[in-house]
Length: 526
Image 1 (cartoon, rainbow, N blue to C red):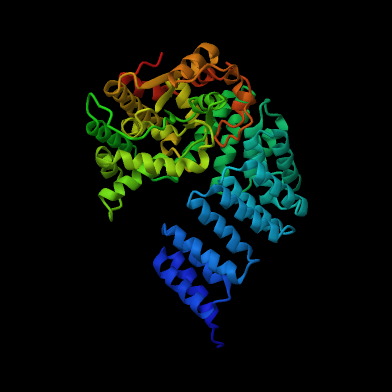
Image 2 (cartoon, rainbow, N blue to C red; image 1 turned 90 degrees about the horizontal axis):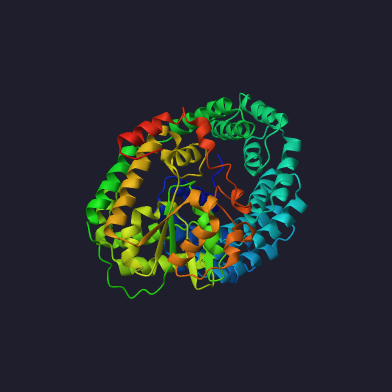
């Protein structure tokens, strides 16, 4: 047997340690690789990746710089350097580093795609599109690159371009499940019989994976709803949700318990803490699919407001603050909720602004449209006394239907079972009522229905609450050119329409479990 060379041995060791989740062991193997093979970029790049995963960002960047000092034309080191710079919240430098990587391999479609993927993460969709255009030009049959370009085209509102990419892929593979679903989400006109037949043909294939089957069921549900075949729509919707729910380990009781613990930790007459923080972000909270993106786009159309999108910064900042209380513990949901009242609100504000900086823009104010931030209204009040909290509401059965017919991307595990949707809504409404009680006048409720039926008056009330002068362009939110990366990316580029307000009534009988559960909890449905 031929002995393996030392470099292959160390590479195998790094891979094995990473696969086992042993980051420190993998980092040790990477260090050994660098010592024995100082001119090989692999040890530096993987070492940097591992350090970044462990939060040692400055050291990760240093390894990239050491690698580039020896190998200035190493694509992977430049792109990893961009990742490190972005983690250090040096966004402009990170984008420059990614572009430096692309300049090294202008003819390599895979490298251009990798750069574009980073730029999407860095929220520079238009720059990402330029590299994706170049990648598609060099590899027009590369399916995954076209899928990515279609996604980014959708984010920036180029729906015809996205549709053209999907059509090109389907010309080679008419039953591509992911593409059929994505193309259906772009559609604003009723589906054709041909479209439905394509979806059904893809679903009928024995080799179709469960993940693809789920997407096809949701796509068929939308297509049948659009054509008015409501029984078929619900049949597909139920099949997709059941299959999705079967693969989750979600426990509704954990969410119910978290609400109770948060309410206990923030009792009546919650006084704002003394804070040196003068920033006044606008937090938009509520259930998903209730119009939060509509409110965000309306505010983001104002000359003084930048829409930062759905940020994870607040949860990250709170987690960081709680880690100072329990440095070595991995917190359960219950422990997380119990510790919230003890969190250092000044630290939360500082961490939040630092983490939000790459996305907040240059305007005086910015919005954070992360619906589940409703859990943290009490902490928001303490960390940012000048913040505005806008709570978007919707008819409970309309909200339940909108949630149930949406296939979310690794979020909202309660959304695939009607009883669990109802239980989550009960806890959410209970918590929001609590926040209104302990923070009177600090939260503005905006009903989606009011925004649709009385747009100007509702917009004026919204802007006034946020301390903003009325600007007519806020009524033309659909003309806002900024990227949209949520499930509402198609709808919010259209003027307001009332057809969605009462669509749920076509499924009133099917939604009866939600109605009954809400009624038992004392929540009026009609």
